[in-house]
Image (cartoon, rainbow, N blue to C red; front, side, top):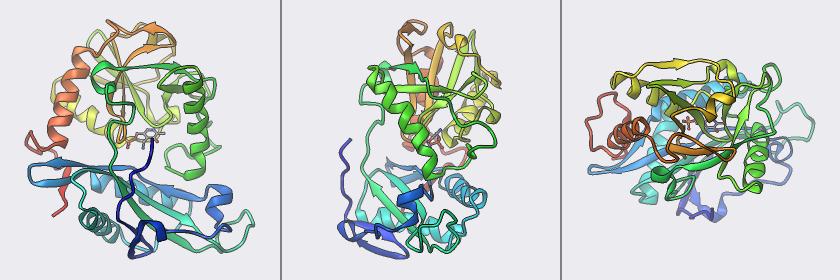
Length: 307
Ligand code: PMP
């Protein structure tokens, strides 16, 4: 997807023109993937743009930093304010927000601790991640031959730049096979997640999603959808899901900041349910989009108005 330039990028405490936000080629991050990041969305509402789950995203950013032993030279409040300011100066009605904290230029040894920590906040217009039709029609996906990282190798619960090589391999393989996205299994062969999405499976009215121990990222959309399903009275389980249960499920869907709630209509060429968005997925989407777009009362305080 082509990137739509915004006017300004927040870079180490200053708003700089998009084209001037550059780093040196010796930056540690470029060589070793030494970064942590977030992906956040701001939705257009009647009261202007509103950031969805800003607090939880910033909390996860600081948790990723803690896991990777990286000191962010700002407070969570400063990063939150910087995000709101960047959205304001760029005049977005809605946007995708990418805070990135990385190790800059300071030597090419593997040990990063002498490299300066730099912070940027990028915003851009971004529509439906898996295609404009995906939210209604659903997507066809395939189980990847690439597994998610094994416990004790990479910290799956942290959003660390270098780990996204795994996601890239999963996604590129899926596209090569004609799928929109791939589903990765964990090291034990149980369902883990998409390359950038968590996954939910619905059978006989019960909603199941893999547990944190299945090498997943602790998705913020996942958590919200669990809450919404609970609000609607559905039983939600966080349980190991064998691959074959995907094929015989009534409904399957992805969640993610970029993917929002995207129905899955086929896995490995096997039609899921009726081969289109199922009724529970639709019901959850109505709640989710109603809340994010400010059409329903913000009963869980998930929105932060930009101005
Ligand atoms: N898993 C992975 C690997 C991801 O990159 C993402 C996107 N951040 C998700 C799941 C979904 O997480 P969230 O709902 O917080 O965007």
